Image (cartoon, rainbow, N blue to C red; front, side, top):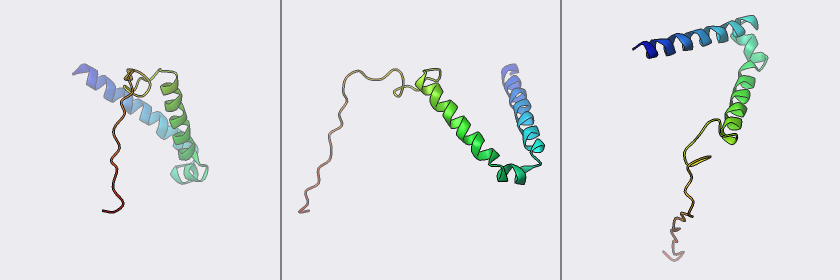
Length: 82
């Protein structure tokens, strides 16, 4: 399908941009030493959390479409004597 091909091309273009960033740092080893990957992970997780909190990213049951009534699950009680 054309849409799948478009998505594949878009992903390829974005990956190529990312590889160029790593090359600009001198390669993978210098990027690791500069904490590039750790910073990218931290920035990505921060952005993801902000999207959830602002409801730009909907997660059913977490930040939208939650059950209104309390849905208490009964706890299993184990007798200490057993």
